[in-house]
Length: 368
Image 1 (cartoon, rainbow, N blue to C red):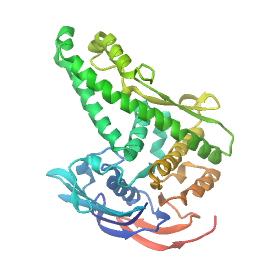
Image 2: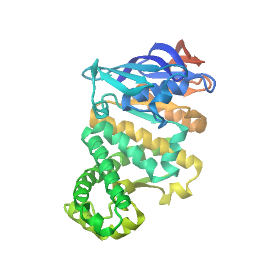
Image 3: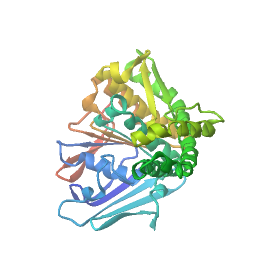
Image 4: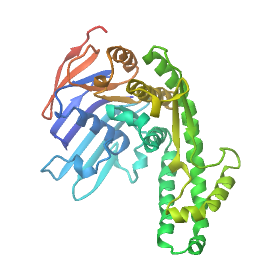
């Protein structure tokens, strides 16, 4: 798949912009705070429905304006897709796919798949499990709307279960209605846990291959899914998790929240049997994070039949020359959007970004 055209109005620092892209590599160069990342953000919004910065929709609107819009045209293997998002300070955003309004954000997920990587993505390796759960959720949701809806359902059920612990003054009062929420929670938890386990198993060989290439084959990468449900992932999962929820009920009541479930999941990451999160160098953590993102590309290609869009935001500033060169050998596989502060030897179309203005400079064809 590829994005052929992007049109934005009053989005971030862009008053008005309409630009067409190269089907392979597009490089945006410019000084900091000129709008390079905002371009990638507008594309991401059209693919996922929200920003990768986890900000409020109203924050995307240009200062002093009441509304904004982003329109993106993408060419897929069997059909074209036009996504339009309209932001308004006075009401919720509206989304259209091929001129038809959608009722739920889940209808947008998977229309145009995307993989985003920036220096901030180092959090994927070295920070809390929440970062790795988000990594799994965004990737799997783009490949499975069923997963996306079950994830939304699970989060609502979990919130209601936890609310019981706060509004009920006694454990006996909780027991009167907890079974209803437990049955629903276990049903959704099973789908999430099995899908996440499958995902980690699928991306492992791709991540190992990418990591070996980028690092020069010096280290062996291992990934394993750590289920937070507290029971084996087998045919008795629902029954066993329900029992464990009942066993932990008094503890959960005292804590005020549910102590087991997919919201406690994690991915364990090792290099040569050493945990990367706590003992890996910054260079190792960067390489692993990049390898996981490249594994996303291959996994989506295998499951969806075509590569997703790749967004690389200021990644080269965090990689040494050797890793930069190896990364560039990957980008030709799919349409890629790269931001950087100076011109590099990258085959593709070059754009200059300054104060919310984008100028196509030339077809950059230097040899690597």
